[in-house]
Image 1 (cartoon, rainbow, N blue to C red):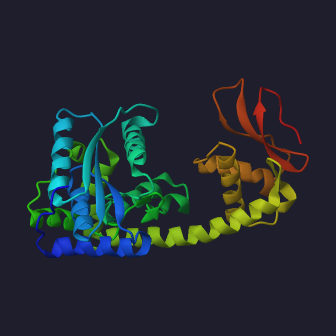
Image 2: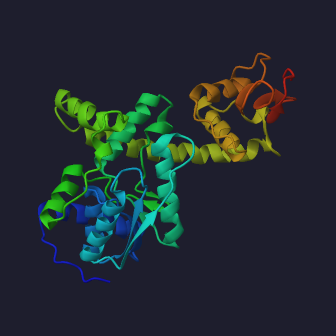
Image 3: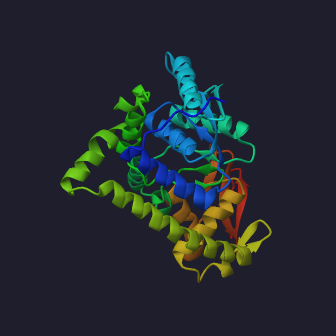
Length: 331
């Protein structure tokens, strides 16, 4: 371990440190963590603040290999972590493959690499209030209800995000106060990514038109919806227990349940059976088998074509998930 470098008490670093201190106090008093370090300002400021707050920090730099020179960027970030006083810093090289596009595949590979080294320690990520605001706006554009507007949680085991109350200007400022040269990811300037346009065009325009405070308001909205959602999810879980009959749901136990709760029950029931529904139209179509029943056929929720697919059917007073092979659904 390299000795920790002296850290000036500049206002930006103090802002970041206060957020990290509060997160440790609420979620991790033992202060032994893995930090996902990209070399960018957010994760560098997070790493520095964790060390300054007396944490035992294992910094992990994930090299996705998607850009020329990525190995050097990763090596340099690990060196910065050692200079800051991390107990350990390492580079993990991953292969980015799989469905969902390069962003989703890179995220899966990154989280898998972090999970592989964490043991029983939490993984800290450098998402800021600005990231939260962007996430809420993306959720709003998807139009899939309050669940998509909850944003990111400060603690979603095993991942923690201590900087969700901190603006990006503070992480950049903290790095400047520490004399740290943060890496600027070229992808963060590529307008082909929706988040880049939200960050560079949409949010600044909203802040201008609405006279400021938009990012903070979006983040507060996410917090409120997450709290409300937790209560509704707990109520839905209780209803699901009374409605479950084996792998099916008893329709009579759901008819009088308000639609918002009933749809939560349906989502969780299908997720438990390996069919997570993110399409609100599908959820409502399945819900209609209970709340707007008129003898309609089943609702396809997964499958690869007309020959075989998974379908939710209402049969003999129950909702069940069946494998459909072209026959008509029946009650």
